[in-house]
Picture 1 (tube, one colour):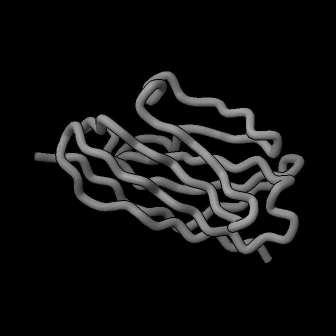
Picture 2 (cartoon, helix red, strand yellow):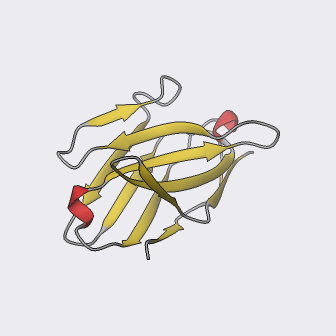
Picture 3 (cartoon, one colour):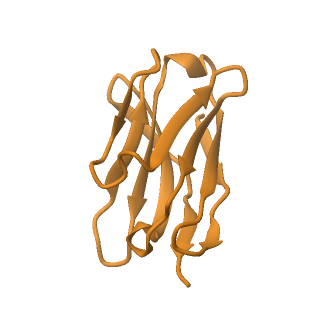
Length: 115
């Protein structure tokens, strides 16, 4: 059974920073591709960033240069460092683990960017 638990969300002012964490209860965590997705009210869930087992990263154009995804395989944890946050980044952020097309989701953590 794969469990993903996100943390680190909250309320932040525009221009501020947050770091999200996703702790995974997965054996052989290092072989999974991990990702962060988000869903704003009334919108579809969208990809934010992914990181492969080899450490290769991919970002949505809207967050390039502001967000950084990383992973610590010793801690079974993936992170999303979010800088220069904008109101349009407001959403529920979900952690995803993928192995050969099989995916698992966390429950999500709310990020609200507002003054």
